[in-house]
Length: 269
Image 1 (cartoon, helix red, strand yellow):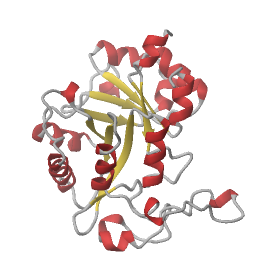
Image 2 (cartoon, one colour):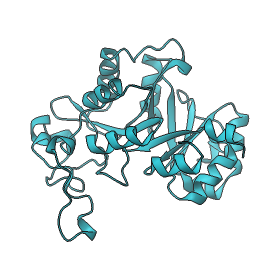
Image 3 (cartoon, rainbow, N blue to C red):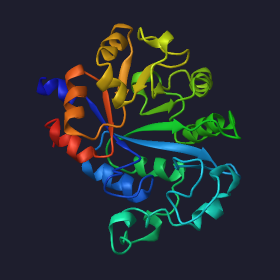
């Protein structure tokens, strides 16, 4: 693996620098930017009053001190919750101090877009739409509206885009591709269905997003994707051996909870 080739691998901070700070919080994304991540990954869900927030689970129980489904709560309800003190709770004698509560309150996608816009360098965004949800296609509609407000919904070409949309839902990606054809789309996979094993992707998807488990078990799949003209963005790659495997196979992006460590392993400052 040459240094030049390693330098072309994009390092994407999964839910921010989520090994060091609570996932999907401003603290985690500020750390990822400071660590030098090329891109930030986030999951988005629609609140009951129509706001896109960065929360992975359908319910807030795991990552906050509240309970309930994101889709049934309004933004004001979510803003009242603490999304930070759970981090490290299982192995710490007292709750960690993340300082300013605004760094660990619920993060709207709008606020994350503002952070990226003010970062002072090019930082890309990989936005995952979560499905199924009671709001169905409204998620993609609201997402494209918000990207439009930031001037990100209609790049001249896919190569010019600093945003890509990812999903395990092929229907979600098809909606995005139909409405915003120059925004890259990533089809996420926990397993490879038989009809896609030759490297094909569903209509509307341009990039493959296989799990690291797929890559470990079927490394030749990356070559098939490349032969079919598709790029590979692999999640969630945290262990040095897995980083080495992905680099050796020539994947285009590594999505990781440890952006600083992966950048260091790839020989980037």
